[in-house]
Length: 321
Image (cartoon, rainbow, N blue to C red):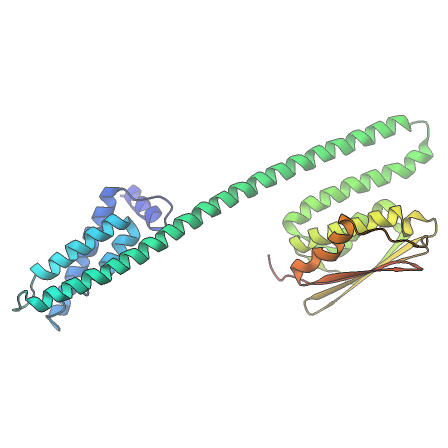
């Protein structure tokens, strides 16, 4: 009995198609209930012949499919003509109602079958998307694992080469560890999000904590926004290390942020860096900075001032993801 109930539940939810026997049994049950309803209505209106069978056709089609629905409609029409719960007998009017009943039943069966086909296609697409998402997660986890192994190998090789130069190793070692910590943070925030201060410290830490200041209250970032901002911060920090404030001995960076309602405003302000005379053609990094926040109803603006690069970022903080 439990197995039968479980099969019925899966069939009704569309998880698995029902067996022919179960479909026929369900259709018979629907016809029986409809006939009992017709018998009850006959005490009030004995001329109700086919109306109770419409729900039977609908549910039988939804459960068993096209063939079961057609069979239910045909049997319901025959029962409406043959069975009499009063003194009236089949006449031309009843046969006219029979034609109307079969016409409406055909439309009902077509509508339900069309919805069933859409539902099946939707389930197929959902299953494929879930499988592709699982594969993507597996691939990302594998790439993160390999990246961690490569970084560990680079760390070990440099430590061996610089074994006799502790001063140089003391400057390289914390940066390599910070880079590893940043990779771990990105893998975590993709699932749970993080605080904006922790994200900035992880991205800017390799350049030395005395080179930057952070101004703003604690703010938790949802996963998708956290990953997007991490990519942008990484791009800005990399450029600061190559051409901006972090490439000069006295260069400094100040990052501040404020929140008004659900809007987040971030200011990235570099000072004491090398002067920027010529700006090269926009590459992938610049395009990323300008378009990444569009998914959050936001934008970013970059200005190359005499004091250094100035970037403002504004976006909406999603309430849930």
